[in-house]
Length: 234
Image (tube, rainbow, N blue to C red; front, side, top):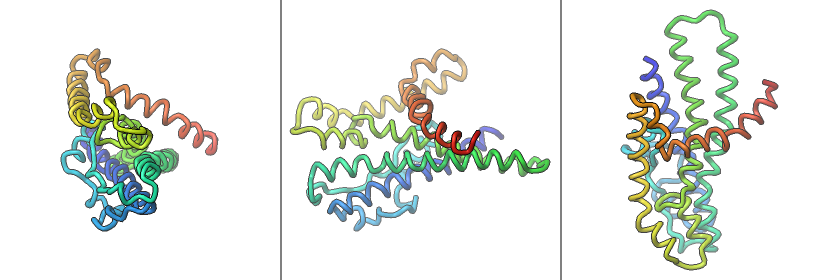
């Protein structure tokens, strides 16, 4: 039952993470002069417009996945490099804001549920589902920030590299040509390590994306946790 609750909560969390991320890309691109995403119906928070089935399921199961990329045409930007940079970082900024809000809701729900009278088994399951969904929204949003800033094509980090590079160079060319292959290998390696670790614990130390997740949760998430814990006097 716990595993079922976790995976169902993961599906909700992925929707709450991906939709603002892709909407932010589309909105910032539009504000910088490119209406491509808007004309394609992507400047919306409707998750059905953004979710890629394979990436959606993989993110819910493994914690790392992808949405359908928002179509942009950088040649429409008023300022090419500025527009490219702002559009690239818009998604991760949106995710950090979502993480900030999700952690507050998570803490408030924990406090509210702890003050309720004795619950039935059914209500306990519902409470567990809701609390888990918001905690995973917090965690996955942070994972999305770090994961998407990896400088691998087609992630946002590669667009940042493009925006900050003066010209095409061998490093940028390598990241563009082989980034997707490296990304698939990293996700596959992480997924395999997670499965093996259930039977052989040391396997977790070889999970490369596991360290990305740890950094996101423990380092990037610390200011959010500290801020709300201080504000709420926890």
